[in-house]
Image (cartoon, rainbow, N blue to C red):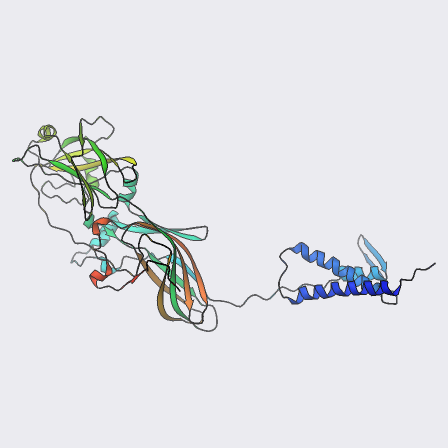
Length: 456
């Protein structure tokens, strides 16, 4: 006996199948890709079942025969519709590529030193060029870590100091403390020009770092005032001294020692002291001294030690200078104890020599080393031509060592904002210069970051 479905059964199947087809059509017209390929297979199965259900309610009969190598399928009626819709799905066309859009990126600008950092001279080699070769210029290096541009300062003397020395009698005026310059690249691949209206520095965090810059003096022995010779250690950085002591020895230096002029207190490269015969930090050091005085000056902290007159007498022959070397131990402001190796000269006759020229700098943005998150917007009026690139340089100036996390963006006059990327920026600037690098003091305009959260 043939089964004939009731009218309500046909209506129910037809309504359910139609609802499924409508839902699938809505998924198609929303014009969004499926996040999981398995969802595509499931939709095909559900759609095929719905089409087969619709076919079951339509009068007539359909036969399908599929034959191929190792494959034979025969179906009729609703099952034939399922086979047709499942195995003969139209080819899915790849979506067209998105239209080109402007973009921005950030990097560390690494060109030659600006000419204003060089000292005018009739010499063939400028003062800055020589300092760069000798490692007397603070430079910045960048690396990309997890989509963050990490910028860090590098200077041979500071890196040696971080590893325990040696601390030397350097002339800090002979060093150049450059500022990091960030390069913002704006790329316009579109067929029409765009206009850049601003570059935004979103300062997410900033932390003051009490970095040291240690220097040891070159003491002078006075024949008319014995037992008064003092050696001092200066921190031209940002920390303090406490519980300081030294262990040291004094050795004679020949007046013919290469690289050391016995009548001139400036040293072309203080590292030449390390070549003096007899210098060895591994052996026992016969003399000790505790700090006799501490001082906090405008350029940094200072600690003073008396030198043994007996040690000075032992080397006071006919030569002009002697070598003082040893270990300097002190606690910092956080109570941490650290020992540094040091080497310097003792003058047994008073030297003389010319002064040095302090460098001057140019700054664009000044961001205080401490404070809450803030936003700095730099007004820009620049058109980037169709198919062209443009480059914007931002020098970030801080008066103190600091760790900062920045997010840089580029605003267009159309209202669009291009994300140039994140920068983790570590800077160094010695306390010795104080405000000497303030752009306002050398008539250079710059933008000062606000102390509270600003608006874009």
